[in-house]
Amino acid sequence: MLQAATEALLMIFTPDRMLFLVLGTLIGVVVGALPGLGGVVGMSLLLPFIFGMDTFDGVALMMGMIAVVHTADTFPSVLLGAPGSAGSQATIMDGYPLARQGQAARALAAAFTSSLLGGIIGAFTLFMLLNIARPLVLLLTSPRLFMLGLFGLATVGVLVRGSALTGVLSALAGLLLGAVGASVTGGVYRYTFDSIYLFDGVPLAIIALALFAIPEIIDLLISGEAVSKDGRGGKLRGGMLRGVRDAFGNKFLVTRSAVLGTAVGMIPGLGSSVVDWLAYGVAERTTRGEKNFGDGDIRGVIAPESANNAKEGGALVPTLLFGIPGSATNAILMGGLLLLGIQVGPTMLTTDLNVTLGIVWTLALANVAGTIACFLLVGPIARVTFIPARQFMPFLIVLITIAAYQSSGNWGDIVALLVLGFTSWLMKRAGWPRAPLLIGAVLSGNLERYLSISANRYGTEWLTDPFVMVMAVLCLLMILGGSARTGSKDDEIIEEALDAEAKDE
Image (cartoon, rainbow, N blue to C red; front, side):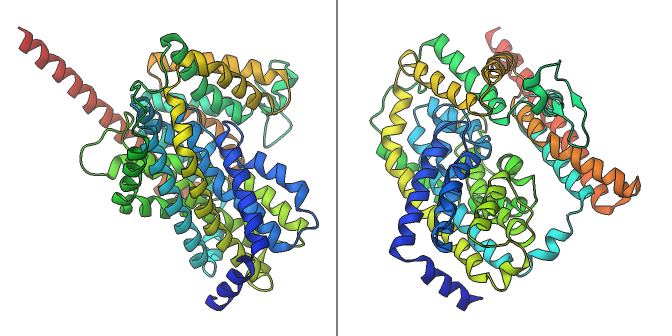
């Protein structure tokens, strides 16, 4: 394996293939930095050019784009509070508050350094798992996939700020929103209200933009302030150095989140949806020292960013070895490999082993190239946070509207963006968490599919599976633990209020 890895590196590390790697990296930076696009759009743009290319040239171009999208998507998440892609949702929780405090450069530098380390760890873990991944993936039957998805939903529902009850209710609302349109198990149309636009459901890109971007835009326009409340923009270089030190100072958190990201990425249909939230939740629960999660804790940026880049290594395991795409981006990658004459499956460990190892090397090298490109952009882009909202927001509104319209090319996209955006603004004003709603919408289809397959294939016997029962207990404990945590916080707030009143008297 080591000899084959060395040969694959020599085949990749040539001037023409490095040129394609850099080109794919630059495309990934642009696609990731624009809110609402993500890897699916980027891969769709590349696919027409793949046909007829040399195998390793095509691999370098595609993997360069895939590896970097989840690094560059940090820009809109930190600067604008709008997720650049599904993998950067949790970064908003602390990245955007840091930008509001004038520490955008610090947050971006910490995120890019964590993404680099996470991506390299993910590539190395993928290399180590190649020989043992097959039995691990085969253990994931539909009942177990359903419970893993349910656990991810329960985790997100209670690890956000606010009461556990509102978190769970928000997650259930997300499941209902994800159920709009055609049923994944039959030809039944639900909650469409005779609107043809809703027959295919509401695009996830619109839901993400509406939940996070629109409320922040409304609030900034009302206040007339810039994103950063601290108008001093002269410490960008110092902030970048501090962010790099933050990432290396939390190396254990980076490593743990990267390993978690790789493991969750191996689960088809689940990894890209919840991996950043799981890493964020674990970090919030297990880190020591003073915690300020949700108000600008740099660890709330480091954990999800290292996990979502490492996830790409894990997602390639079922994609390459079984032809089961770990994400929508990897589904298009399979099509690109087919155009290059590569059939994914068991042959990726035998006759096409050099291609598999070439993908591993490209994944690692692209993370390095993408991080360098993003660091070069931190200074000029971070200054956007100091521009008054009334000067910058009209451009951003146009950009988000275009991003929403490209989801399906229907005017209903814009209507859905406005309706969901105003609803999300009301949720923010009322203190309701919006993240569980988004994750519920993302997981709705997979949960329904796995539940239907489990019921049709196993009847009720799957409920007695030890793994299913353990996950059910963990889901229950997660919800009860969240309720207890919320109760203790409420008691602390009441006690602080009483103490303040006593001091006044």
